[in-house]
Length: 555
Ligand code: TEU
Ligand code: CA
Image (cartoon, rainbow, N blue to C red):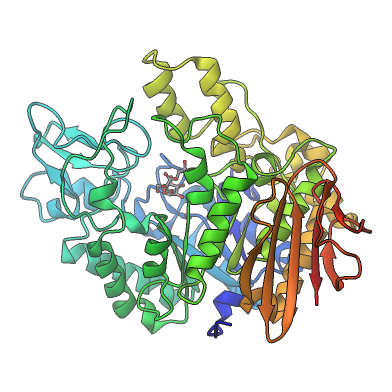
């Protein structure tokens, strides 16, 4: 039995808001801060403790706010700083907390620092970014960007290239420059003084660039991998520890690193000695399982139970006793979880959405719910390129389809399956026009299924996915074993059942989840085996699990 140190951020459930798609208060088709404020009672009723909002800062929106032009201003489309202050006050008034997205690996190319930086080689801001001379008439090295193409952009005025690991409008900051670190830490302090409660740190594992060596080129790949030089380096850990000393230690925050890597990396970032962050997001069960060829995420690879379970169990076991874990199956970068891991057909959508929720909320770690997940919202399955808004999709199309390397129909199928816009369609509030998201024309299409899947209908139905989430969240708040219990995998050879046990102070919690649309044998499902804590079926069959059945019992 591990002695887990208690902390409020271990006992919390986090709800992620993608502000552009949450609620539009003024009819311009774009979600905004006043829209969030208007729906805080909905989140309070759901029972969540912490709200994480994706970036709300001034931005030209090349990557929907992940390209920031002013860290201390609110994006005009989202409202004003007064709107922000009112939102924060209202969140606190309801006993909830607010986590801000910290995007500090890069800024927008329209940020004042970059506008200065590109003016001349001797500008005082030149060294805020990463500029290099070209090599052999081309880029300084072979790195590819996460959004297709080279990671380097040529600037004719100063005859040098700047590094951008994401879009060319997201130049990477040079963290090796102490003035950059001073600026970022001062900005973080400014937000903490405003009273925010934490940070979700965008691609924080990439801030410490250790060298500019060419990266390995996979078979069929067009560019080299920057990973060995830029990901999870000693330098990154040093910057994070400095951030801990200079900013984080001064406040009682929740800190979540979007860092990826393997469990050894996560253990360093989120180590129990508290010198870095509280927890990090892993990508092995999402991008890791999906990415199978030179085109990265664009593939037909599904989510076989064996692979998902191997990854999630390994993260639980490796981190246990050493570091805290995060629990998520979807966010604004991933497709909808019921479409990806469950079954979004009308017959099984609700059952499988509840099964997936049970699985996740009963594991060891802090659960993250992505807006609409609590309703069982599904992928939208766009069929043409024009329907997509995401820069990742359009850049991939240019690189693979327009160049003739990949068939257009294949690419459209992969987009429909895995693209980020699946998660970015508007929140489905009710059965009125545009699902109650906006009285204007939404910036991205509303999913056609909103008449069946929406908050108002689900709140009125005691058996809905929404009420199931509400119950799961409440259980975490009342049962220590769900937060602090030891985790032990069960039935790891099963082709159909994901099962595990939690244990604390002599209590045992058993979690059984049928990952298939068939009734399957499961010896552990004995109706005499304990008192049921939660299930998505009203009755059980001894020795079996019904399709997508989830069952949790306490002994
Ligand atoms: O995403 C980090 C990241 O590594 C992405 O490449 C992610 O894996 C990808 O979107 C999945 O296809 C963060 C943000 O969450 C994302 O929205 C931003 O676009 C990105 O950083 C750049 O800021
Ligand atoms: Ca609006």
